[in-house]
Image 1: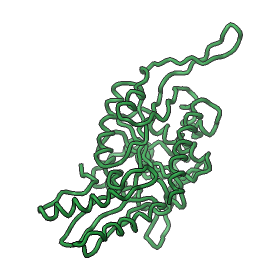
Image 2: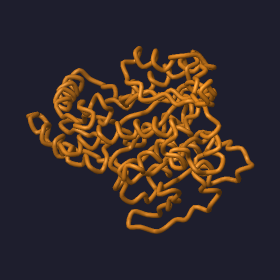
Image 3: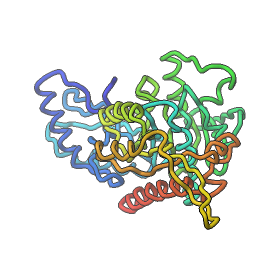
Image 4: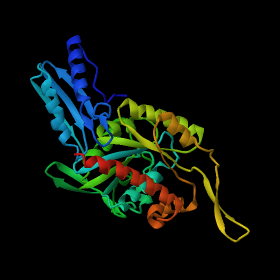
Amino acid sequence: MTDRSPTALTSPLTDNRKAEVILLLKQVCEPMLNKDIVSLGMVRNLRIIDNYIYLRLYVGSEQLELQEQVEGILTHLDWCKKTYVELCTIPNVRTTLAVSSGKGGVGKSTVAVNLAAALSLTGAKVGLLDADVYGPNVPQMLGAGQSDIQAIDTTHGQRFIPLEAHGIKVMSVGLLTDPSHPLAWRGPVLHKIITQFIHQVEWGELDYLLIDLPPGTGDAQITIVQESPICGVILVTTPQQVAIADVRRSVHMFRQVGVPVLGIVENMSYLLTENLGNDGEHSHIPQYIFGKDGGKQLAEELQAPLLGQVPIHACICEGGDIGVPITLSDRHFFASQVFTEIAQALVETFSHARKCF
């Protein structure tokens, strides 16, 4: 796997100069997550050639001022004649978040769709990129169907126009193929398609772009993480130990390339069953059919917050099947409230940080 952190060096002089550059760059703090831009993986492809510095800076649309800070702080190097900073961003997108899982079948797309819906209910402008090349189900889960993708010509070249469902802008690799055919793309084609979907979509103004990643830690996941300005990832798991083990591998990948884990969502935490008491009142009794507190255990182990525990209920599944997420169809349903609380926590985190810019 190609590391997003600064690359290896070829001489002792270059080693020393690169260490100086990294030390200075670690003084530039990204206020949303209150960490330095090197630790967050925002600095990539750092090279020192003679007396010149070259690097890529991956930022959101409200972090463009970081380029000036980077260039300014590197002027302290008396040996540096010029710094070349290539700004890499998704135009007009403020915050890009990934939704990932180590294992398939844990309800990652269900979480991504409902979280997007919950964020939109806060008044935020939300986009959802379905980059799960092995199971692109987001259009169906949002009721977008198998609509044709339109493209327009812009000053930056041709751009795809996302679909819109329930006020959420949607783009999916599944819209490129017949829904009855398997997505059997090889590496180079897969890389090209994913890169196009990251850089060639006309999203317009977005507060949040959620990227629904494929499960696991393969080429597709690495390509997406390396090509997009993801500022944090939400990991989805079930309470089962086999799912927890796979999430650990994903965490290692994200931390190796400098993407912070914002938190854990434990899906299918328990089954909600109704019980009719002697007084005629209905109550809900949780049944932990997949084990208990696996997400809590993982959160403690990784020192990442447990953002929420989502129960199993037929209404959640039905919402995905008919294209109306439960968070939109029944805002008072318990699972909807869990997604709403997660969305509110994200909004508070990033809204507070934006005031600092």
